[in-house]
Amino acid sequence: MQLRYRFRLYPTAGQQQALARAFGCARVVFNDGLRARQEAHAAGLPYIKDTDLQKQVVTAAKRTEERAWLGEVSSVVLVQALADLHTGYRNFFASVTGKRKGPKVAPPRFQSRKDNRQAIRLTRNGFTLRPNGRLYVAKVGEIPVRWSRSLPSDPSSVTVVKDAAGRYFASFVVQTDPSEVLPEVTPEVGIDLGLTHFAVLSDGRKVSSPKFLRRAERKLRMAQQDLSRKAKGSSNRKKAVARVARLHARVADARRDHHHKLSTAIIRDNQAVYVEDLAVKGLARTRLAKSVHDSGWAQFTAMLEYKAARYGRVFGKVDRWLPSSQTCHVCMVVDGPKPLNVRTWTCGACRTTHDRDVNAARIVLAAGRAERQNACGGTVSPSA
Image 1 (cartoon, helix red, strand yellow):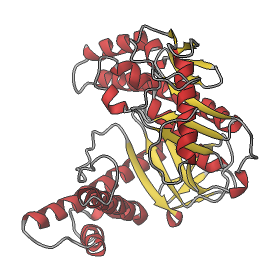
Image 2: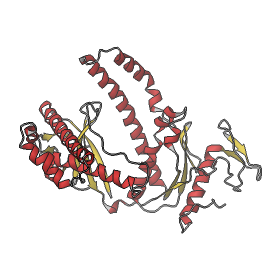
Image 3: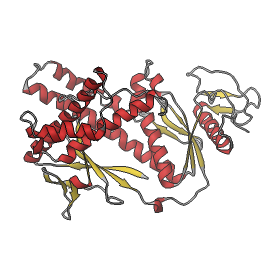
Image 4: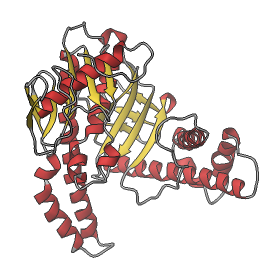
């Protein structure tokens, strides 16, 4: 299984200039390749092959006076920029023809030098890990790395990223060891995600919602007000933009750290984990949009899924239309819809009193078990 390991980089001033040059060259090559294919399509010409496009916008362009400065950066950076363009087109074609599942994929778009996030990707012939613990990037130099953990294997590629807050990161792609599979345990758990409580587990545990964005709103409001008063194009405005970006980055880092710790604990303690397949995009269009985005359900669910695959656990999603808040987990009788302000209710059939969220988590667990036992893979009703 391939995973990404991200570490903080601390390049010197000269290395930052070299990285900025690499970011710019990769962006120009990407845009040149995209423009060449768009012009060929408009002229009714056949689709330009990947190798022909590389000869046109990289090899031949370096010999011209207008693009001679492309030779100042590693050729690996330029080739990988075109590889990203090829991947974008393949994903677009697969989405249009129906071969790719999920939401529709748009065609590649031009990259802007004003984008807050810049990145380059290098394969093994463009970087090395030095014995002194530094990352050597071709035509940039040895960049200090803050190693928070060790890599499970030698990386196959690295992506050097500069985020909106001005921080530099190295994202390594590594192959994980199959020996990381955890020993089997007995418990299984269903999870009901919400806003009042971030997660309610079928065993009765409730994880309060940290609300990282809500807690940082006052500082963000003041920083954004300060930004609005700065003249466009001024140095003070650039500093104010960076200040707002750092506050948002701090919120995102805290949320990601919380999701990692919680998902790891759940996967470690349970053999099977089931969650509801929520329509996060639809919920984000309601008046609860800010709270939904602040919770980060999609990121947390994705972490549960890949960690379950990594450590040999079972992960499953149940139908979002499952009446989990209306069904009694004791007798499986559907008691009818209930408004959101009703947090406890009593089943009309067996007279059992339920906590709304805990009961929903137990219904999710029952539905997940039933779906797992269904050999055909179709949707079935949860059994008692």
